[in-house]
Length: 398
Figure 1: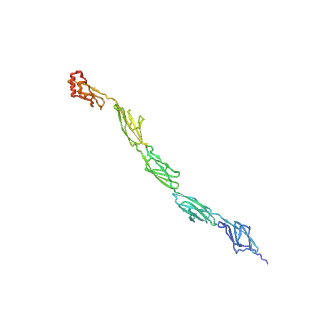
Figure 2: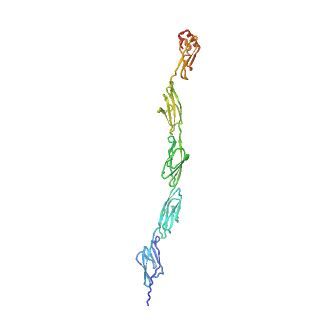
Figure 3: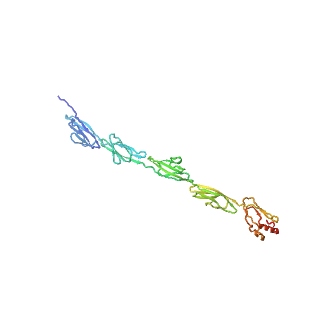
């Protein structure tokens, strides 16, 4: 009696992959596998090293045909895999500034099993996912997957801790410029301004207006959060010229006078005006006409002072009346009286100049007196009067 025994061949094997560590996949057959013959489709892409070991250099599907001792056959497909995918890395550049003195560099990869490494600009290596640094430079982030494939990326860390700089241009407050706009040069497009000064002055403007002298402080903040403080002083010059003078009078003795004026704390120009018309730039000009003379003194700082001098004309002649009288043998002396409607007059008396009988009167002739009354009683005059009594020719001369 015949008995049909149909036992298919059996094979037990282990195969690895083609990857970045090796350029071939090794297939090792378990020596306890039950088969007699093994055939692999194709003639290239693999190499048989011995009865149980095969090297595959190309990835793909290979058909294994098996035959057992009873001539039974079977087949299977073996997939040779190429695993040369590199890990995908990501990170980002960063910047250190005055606010962030430390920055964490975070490395990312799509392979959770990869070994991660950092290399700093000095060549130091750190096997970790994230790296916190306080200095700048080129950092290399790398990863090695289990297949031996690796990749790296460059991370740049820049250092921006430069404080902003500006040059302040100040001015002097004076009568020409009682306030001014603060000027400065430099790139101020990304700067935040904070001005403080005397009298509670505070401004956030880029170009503020200042109208008070004193010490000011400017704090500027840049986009990198760095700050600078600039101290500056604003001076003032409001020194005004000081004019003084006195009025004066034109009269019959003075047909022109020198205007009396004095200027102190003066470093600029002078301007005299009469009836709003300019006529001189000297301090003490001569004038012939009465009027209100305006003197304006300008200093270089724009400050000024003014003064008005009143010049009047007193050229009216005094009205004068003299009452005469008669000397005779009975009236030995008389008083001459001058009458005028004006006060404070100076009088000049002069008498006759008779011939021989008046020689003793020479001291009296044209002698000046400051009185309006003149009493004639000198001895010489009495002698003359006696002679006059004898000579009626002079009677009534006075």
